[in-house]
Amino acid sequence: MGLLLLKYMLKYQPLDLAFQALGDPTRRALVERLAGGPASVSELAAPLPMSMPAVMGHLKVLEQSGLVKSEKIGRVRTCRIDPKMLSQAEQWVAERRVLWERNLDRLGQFLDEENI
Amino acid sequence: MGLLLLKYMLKYQPLDLAFQALGDPTRRALVERLAGGPASVSELAAPLPMSMPAVMGHLKVLEQSGLVKSEKIGRVRTCRIDPKMLSQAEQWVAERRVLWERNLDRLGQFLDEENI
Image (cartoon, rainbow over the protein chains, first blue to last red):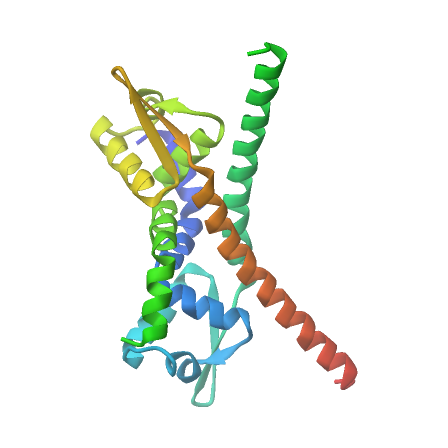
């Protein structure tokens, strides 16, 4: 494997997990709910048409990706957004969009200058 | 399945594919390269330490997700970013981050008012 790609893969591993976690509608529904404030696992599971273990599986994927963290106090596990990873994912996409737009501007400028 | 979740899943299907596509370092490298301007499949494959069919597989995932489009002229297939889906993915994450920050502000305000 090329050293550059290896470095790239090692560097961006966390984004893999974050984007993979967001690639599922139930997990996005959980992120959406938690963006409104912390919630217990039972509160998160209540509106979802699936078993508690299924919800916990999705929460585990979200925790492993760094998008969500949780804390157990007594018998209640409370989940909350960990904003760092959400910002990182947003920033990755935003930077590529900006790069793309800048490239498009340059093309437009070139066409203008050349009167094409 | 709950009707609400069904609606949610139908509505957001495209985001599933977009985030899943971004959850891979090679595909992010391809998006990164294409953000700098259109490129042929051979140009995209050249720096990558993998077979042409493997690169084409990744490009197919990117096309199916709507992040990339391609056009074949003569024997050359040229790929470019389709910015709509990139913006949609960015917007989804940005809106949840803003919602989360607004919720945090409200909490801070509450604590201030209550002098906690």
